Structure formats: C-alpha cells, structure tokens
Amino acid sequence: MRKIKKIAVMTSGGDSPGMNAAIRSVVRACAYYRTECVGIYRGYQGMIEGDMIPLTARSVNNIVHKGGTILKSARSKDFRTKEGRKKAYENLKENNIDALVVIGGDGSFTGGVVFNKEYNFPIIGIPGTIDNDIFGTTHTLGYDTALNTAVDAIDKIRDTASSHNRLFFVEVMGRDAGFIALNAGVGAGAEEILIPEEDLGLDRLLESLKKSRRAGKSSSIVVVSEGDKTGRNVFELADYVEENLEDYEVRVSVLGHMQRGGTPSCFDRVLASRMGVKAVELLIDGKTNLMVGLQNNEIQTIDLEKAIKGQNDINRELLRVSDIMTT
Ligand code: ATP
Image (cartoon, rainbow, N blue to C red; front, side):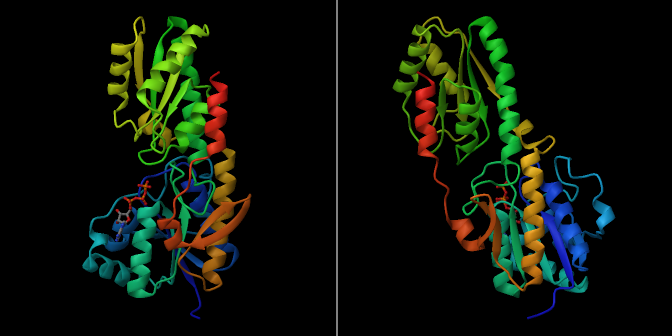
C-alpha cells in the first residue's frame, strides 16, 4: 500500500452550498493527520492546467458559512479526452500528489472512476449537488439549503398570491429528480406538485385546482420541477390552465439559480464536516473509488460506480402525505 503524504481536493460540476465547508473539513483533517493538502481550482480543468494552491488549516478560516466554492468549479471537455487526463496525471505527479477528493455530482464521479482505471490513482467522492440525485446517500451537500431557500421563496410568493387571489406556478430546480419540488412543495403547502418521476396528468391538475377553489382557498401554488413529466414547461402549463379554467389569474415564477447560492444550512455544514473527515481517513487507510454518504444518520461508504449507476426513488409516503395535505 502506497503511503498517502499529499491529498488534493477540488470541487467539480455544478456548485452547491456546503462545498466550502467540505473543503475546510478535508483541509483540516489533512492537517490533523499531518498530511499535506493542495486545492485544485476549477475542477478537472484546473487539474489539466496545473492550477493549484497549497492549503493549510489556516487557509480555510471563515469559509464554513459561505456559499459557492473558494476553489471555483467548472466543467471540463478536455478531461473527457485521454490526452487531457494524461496531462492531469502528469501535473498531479509533478506536484507529488498521492490522492484526490472530488466534491461534485455523478458526472464528476464518472470522470474520477475513468481516471482511476487509467492511472490507478486513489479517489474518494463527496456528493455535492442540490438535486439530491445521488444513490448511496439520503442527503447530498447543498440539498437541505436549497430546500430551505425554495420554501422561503414560495412563502413570499404566497403572500402576493393570496393578496390578489392568484394562482402561481413556481418552478424549482430538478431536471431529472423531483426531490426539491416534492419536499419544498410539502413544506410550503403547495396545492399541487409536479415532478419528473410521476405523471399526475393535466386533468388531475385542473380537477385539483377547481377543488381547491371550491374549498374556499384564496390562492394556489403549484410547484413544478424543471423536468416535470407532463413534458410541458412551467409557462406552457400556466397557459394550459388559463385556457381551461375560467377566472384564473395565473402567474409564473422561476426560482432558478438562487437555489444554488446562499449561506449553507447548519445541516449542510455538519454533513460537509463529517464527509470531509471521512474522505481523508479513507484515503489514508488506502481506500479508493468510494463515495461517502449519509445513511440512517451515519456516515457510510458506497462504491463510486454504484453511486453513479444507482437511482434514488422518490418517497411514496411523502407523495401520499402531499395528497392528504391538499384536502
Ligand atoms: P451536477 O450534478 O451539478 O451537474 P456533475 O458532477 O454531474 O455535477 P458534470 O458536468 O456532469 O457535473 O461533470 C463534471 C465534469 O466531470 C465534466 O465537466 C467532465 O470534466 C468530467 N466528466 C464527466 N463525465 C466524464 C467521463 N465520462 N469521462 C471523463 N470525464 C468526465
């Protein structure tokens, strides 16, 4: 087993709140175990360009509460090529780096697995994405913060919706996964929630809106995931409802990138701290190709390839609760 003397950490793919807390944790755990640490800027692209900085315990002061990532994030086309990865490997060797912690989503993990196969380079993944769409963890870094941001925004929209008796369609992030929509929708008391995993049907949407009006509700909120299964975007859905239901004043609000930003919640900071420590300990113990995840509130590991291939199912119990709440 080769001794791990120097660990690199980077953030890759879409950024998410809590990434800084995870960087801090990796750096401090390295310092604790007397292992050198290097930060790679802009994910795999920075690795190819040799864009790195030595990090000590003091380099990560005052970042635990900050959104975004001090190491920047990027998507790298070059890393998808053999030549790009060769350059990246040469840079790691030149800088005496023995192992890598990748904080990112399944694309970033796929790149890591490919790289490990080619160069037998030790890699541990930390799931950092607001979408919560990574198998092997109940929570990805940033998901909890994004939920709170979405709920807060929907609460504000409801104030204006109820003042004007309006129907609001609110689009939240989640192209392939409805976790944000379902949880934020239940949390904010949405009348309907449209997600990629379930086709609830447009008829049912109309019925449910009529029902809510009959029941005397003065405003309605429909939370829609970006990749909703009806195949219509949020504007088309709003048009459809306006065409089919009389007397409805419909408005659309797309929350967009605000969901990626902001101060990480306490939950995300604690999760990031736990995951960072575990990632460093795994590498020092000679482990590779694993992702750290949260299961039953314990930090666990799962094969990176399993994490990439597996799929988190939507919580059926929560769908049922959501149905009952709209009564
Ligand atoms: P998010 O979930 O926020 O989109 P992600 O980590 O899935 O984050 P991607 O853009 O899919 O984001 O991947 C990040 C980077 O990982 C890519 O820009 C690319 O450099 C690398 N990568 C992804 N797939 C591969 C692959 N098959 N081979 C080599 N590198 C890859």
